[in-house]
Image (cartoon, rainbow, N blue to C red; front, side, top):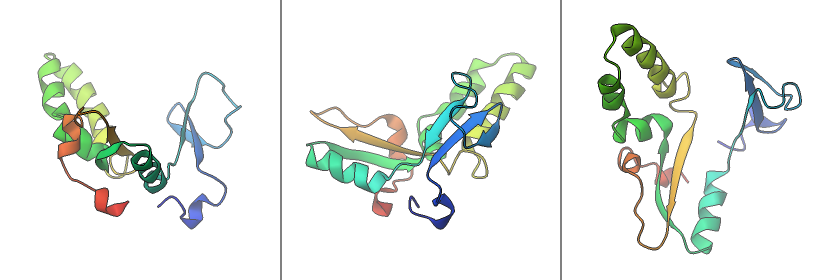
Length: 127
């Protein structure tokens, strides 16, 4: 995924007010910056450094396995707040939004286990 043709100009993306662009100097301090990560290379380097691969999955799988959906339902008592929180969660979970595009990797060491969210759909075989 990291080396796909549509990333020929690089992997840095900027977001300002929910709009994507490629100029990190346009609104310094006001925009979010993100970049694609070669998770296969990261996993290899971590293993070589003595870490264990505790899991690799999508953001949607991680949040659902961690019980985020239930926490949102319990947190909002007001119907309007529930609607707003559900809309935000939907953006984090839906495949067309951030749910499948963003990946989560857990690297562990020294007996520390992976977070609960890593116990959903395991995608380590894709690395």
